[in-house]
Every structure is written in C-alpha cells, then in structure tokens.
Image 1 (cartoon, rainbow, N blue to C red):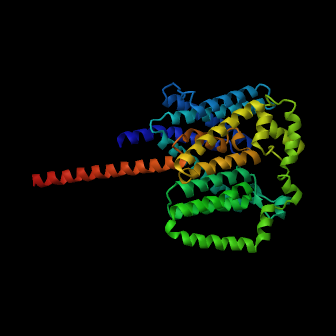
Image 2 (cartoon, rainbow, N blue to C red):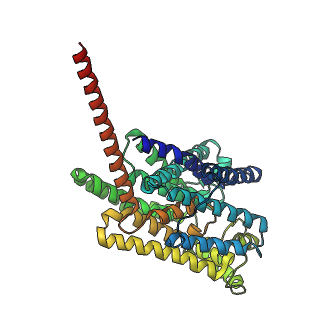
Image 3 (cartoon, rainbow, N blue to C red):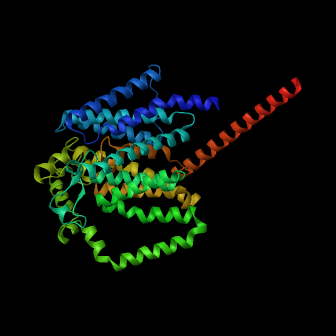
Length: 433
C-alpha cells in the first residue's frame, strides 16, 4: 500500500499538467488564451524535466501508436515552414509535442492501466467543470454563451448554445464523452452522478448537435440492459412510452432536428458540401503537403461569413498537411479499428462496447467536424489517450473494471492488516493485564 501511495503521489504533478494543457486552448479572449497556452507548455516541461531529473525517455518507437503519432508530429512540424500562420503553427506543434511527451511519461509508469484510468478521470472531471460553467453562463450571461442568430431564432428552442469558450459543437462532444464515462465506466454515486448526467443531457439538448444526440439511446440502452437486468421490464416499458411520445409528436422532433434550417441546407450537410467543394479547388493545387496549419479556417473565413473551419477532419488535414498527413491519421484510425474489432471478436461486444462507442463517434465526428484532426484540443488529447490505453485483450471498459477490482483488493488487504494489528494490540494488552 505504501508503494501504491508513493506511486500515486509521483504522478500527481503530471496529472495536474494534463489538466492545465486540457484547458489551455479553449476559446478565451486572445490575450488570456496566449497566456494560458504559454503557461501550460512552460509548466509541463518544467515538471517533466524537474521530476524526471533532467532526462526524458520515450516509449519504444516500435510501439504502433507511438510511431504513428511521432510521424504525424513530424509532418505537422514540416508544414510550419510554408504555413499561412507560422506563429500559430509553431505554437500548436509545440503544444502537441508537449501533450505527446506527457502522455508518454504517464504510459511508462509500472501501473499504466491504473494511471490511464486516473488520466481519463482527470480529463472527464475537467470537462464536467467546463460544462457546468457553460451551462450556468447560458442562462446567466446569454450574450456570451448563447446564440440568438437568425437560424437559432427559427429553431424549436428559439436559441442555441453559443461560442463562449467551448462552442456548441465542442460542448456537445465533451458532453457525450462525459455521459459515456458517467454511465458506462464510473461507479454510480447517487445524486452527484444524477446531477452530472442531467447537466450533460441539457448541454446536448441546447447545443442541438445531431451527432451527439445519436449516442444517447445507445449509451442508455447499454447501461440499463447490462447493469440493471432485474429492472429490465421497467426500462422496456419506459422505452416504449418514450417511443410512443416521439411517434405522436414526430413533427416536434423534426422541427428540433432541423434547427431552423431549410431542407436544402440540411441536405447539403448544413452547407458543408459547399465548403468542401470550395476546399477541393485549393487541395488540388497542393495535394501532397498542403498549406500548413490553419489553412482550412482561413479559407472558410475568407469565403463564408461566420465559418471558422471547413467542418471536416479529412478536408482540414488535406488543406493543412496534405495527403501525407491524412494517410498517417487514417493509419491511426485503422490501428484503433483493428484493436477494437479484434477484442470484440475475442471477448464479445459487452466487454468492448465503450471502445466501440468512442471509436465510432470519432470516425463520424472526423467526417462532419474536425475530430482527430483538431490540433491540440481536448478531443485530440482524449484520442491519443485512447490509442495508448487500448491493446489486444484490454479495452477501456476492461481497464476500468480491472483497476477497480485491484483497488478493492488493496483496500481489503489493508483492512485485514488493520484488523490484525488491532487484534495483536488487544492481545498484548490482555497479557500485560
């Protein structure tokens, strides 16, 4: 137990750095954003060098995720040379290298499964705090946290979650991750868990993100049918009641999903196909190496008012790092698909359902939004942690289950030791008496 406590204390500085890097690149005002980003990089490298006694060790490059991430970082670094935003590109690459080295340091710990669980818990806890601030701001300071534009006013709610420091898409994505963590991985803790789940559901509802809402019935069904088998009939009846309500109020659901948009706009992927067609004209001119970081956002903002990205990880990568960078990102996805599908066939769907949800969500989101192509973002950090954590015969769900079992065993052994010491002390007192 003493060794476990010492090991836990030794990784705490790295977990604090992980939390700092996680929040350093949110949509704060520019001066605050640059300050937090520089602070995150500086503090993390100081911690890495000081706690590591001036040495840095990287896990074997032959480790498949490590190799793929290093190659991707190399292509991103190369793209800084001809980037249209050199300073931003160098800053982003420095942040991604810092993320990678920090995760590598955590991955080299002897108790990596437990460390991976702690790192995921830190990420999700920070997400919940950010979502809580966003939700309070939506009602208290709607001028900054709410969107009352033309389309938002025509939607069913008459308002939508605005940019704030998260934005509607990022807030909905983080809500989906937190919901998956709360419902499928973390032990239920009564009122606290219920409040956190309710907050995530409200964020997803007011953000009106279609991609995130698709995850809701899947997560809820898996949770109820796996962990509450004795109440299954109640959940079936509740599901039938909800399904009947949806059928009876189908027009209401359609209005909500339309978000105040016309049918033509919806069929064009909310204007995405128009942006992608425009982006292809530029991709054709530099297909191999691209234009450097930020090219997608600059292109979209130049042609389309109020658009900050090309809303596709594929096109964003082609514009930024060209076909070379896209091939490496696709290889990362192929690696994750291979590991997850192998584990599903070997251990069954239930034991790897969480991995399957995370993988499918990233694949879908990388097509309709930035996803894995979002340089130094909360989504990218969770994706890299996912790549490091999964391996054959070990997924996220099994990792959590094994670590919880190990902690229970340690507590049990510690309690037995305390009882033994207490019994020995009572025996000594009786003998002395």
